[in-house]
Image 1 (cartoon, rainbow, N blue to C red):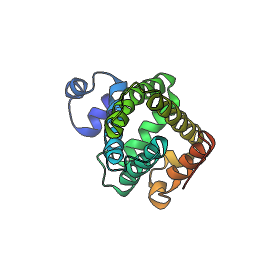
Image 2 (cartoon, rainbow, N blue to C red):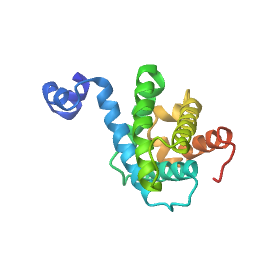
Image 3 (cartoon, rainbow, N blue to C red):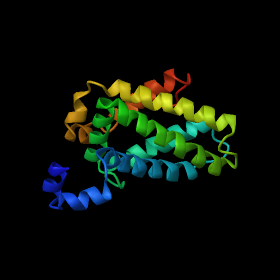
Image 4 (cartoon, rainbow, N blue to C red):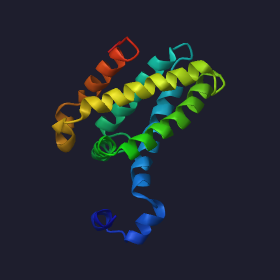
Length: 173
């Protein structure tokens, strides 16, 4: 937190009031990204396949981050990804957040119960896709060079595509 305080010019005490743990600092980014994905999910058609809807919503959310129009800056998202790939504890916390948030969003959009087996299966499949996408990024030096994403804005989509293709067995991008 000392580095964050120094970079932001805010006292450490102020930062720890907002972010009581280091994990909460990263989970705040996750929450902002999830909120954006859920907003994009709600903009879709109700007859869209649930996994396809999550894929579309997440791609639109990533597109906003890359374009600089989202609540999460590109560099902060990249740093969150690096931390998630380096910390199994943080990865588990992010996964748990996803499993708590997505069933409610899907249920709301599709008019279903959050405990419906189709919703729960969709979230498990999507969790596997996200895990596969992160696994594809391990060792990707572009993550440590944020400006490369400005030149190659489709890099995250290229990671997402093979994971989406292999895990549920289909791809449309």
